[in-house]
Image (cartoon, rainbow, N blue to C red; front, side):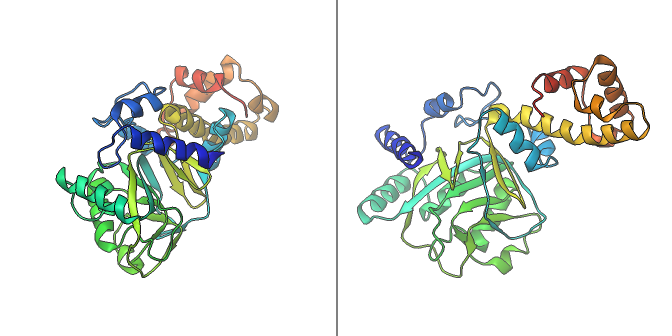
Length: 306
């Protein structure tokens, strides 16, 4: 059923008359209509930079729990190989969908792309669309040999344009050279010495499937050792704020129980105004842990399910 839905979306994109398989802005705005903030000119939600910075510090486990409680159960994908185990990739998704090549289709796509200014093979086209803070997320249908969507040269271009890494349901080459890109990371299915062959970009900045997860352009991407979480843009603030609070609550609760100011039962049950005020005061004395207003705390607690 899930594959059928993705295929249906793909057919719609083709029938909509895409340039270079790019989704029309109006359709992207429609699909992400829950997002009420700023957007890129192409229609992608523009999650604020400060929220991206905060997102890099939260735990995927906590963020996943918030999404699950909201009914979003198809947003995580695991089983990746990484260039570095300790370099998170966090940012706004810019997506690409690749398919096995077919000569008649590929020739037409390249002919149209070249006529309108696109250069090189289709695997370089998404890279030209990147902005700072973007994460290039590509569905290469799991192809390993001859499925290398990136080598050292393209990795350098990606990092230069976005300051960020990539998530590929496919492979990459030149692992030793890519390791020298300080701060860059890639989550891929595997590494392989071959060059890209028999693949063509059939969707740019479109909804894609990444294993068992669905990804829309503009989603908040958080990739760490556990795997990759794709957070719908309209839930990004809620997920990040809640995950931050869960981590802070554990530290606060430990100190309160240890000092015998509150019991474990009081910390783990519904908070009254006194506990809320004590938490805000406690946090103000520890600015290195983050900031939270009483209004933000009330909002987080209003959706508390843990």
